[in-house]
Image (tube, rainbow, N blue to C red; front, side, top):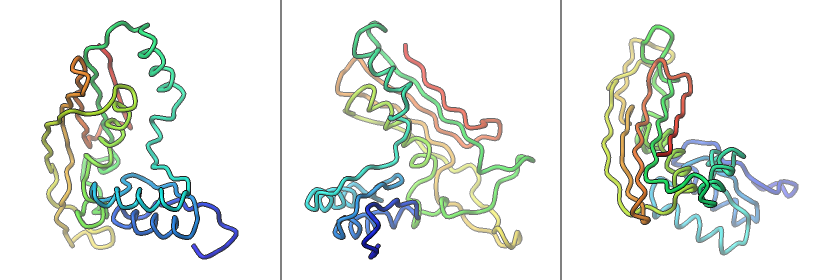
Length: 204
């Protein structure tokens, strides 16, 4: 951070350290590229944005789905009216990297703690589908949803006899109502064995 020949900082640490690192980097005049989430709360994120704006550095959060050429093409199609009137948008994100080949739970990791991660499937999977839907559709008016922990305990990596309590969600399902009333969105985001990094989105 103190090196003068470093122009930018990439933040890929525990979620609860993103804001302190981003603020320190900005105050040292270094550009910031942070993994999601920027902050553990809205207030934290707003404080980071305030400091970044005051210092004038360039900053971004790694919502890479919005920058894919395919998504930019879809956004142009929607804006042009070529798809007609889109009345709903559905998406699913199913990933299986918290499960092993025998359908057993994988070892306990920091993402399963409130202290370091903040949330589970909601912040890790659903965050990408939320950001993409907002990019394609617009701002949110209201939201409702549920979360669930499927595996309440997981073993220690080095000592399988040592068991940790899982604090974050394995599954989240939610529905958004956007400010443009003809839009809505429904997303399940699930850790499941047969997912193989599936991410599906449909327009109706």
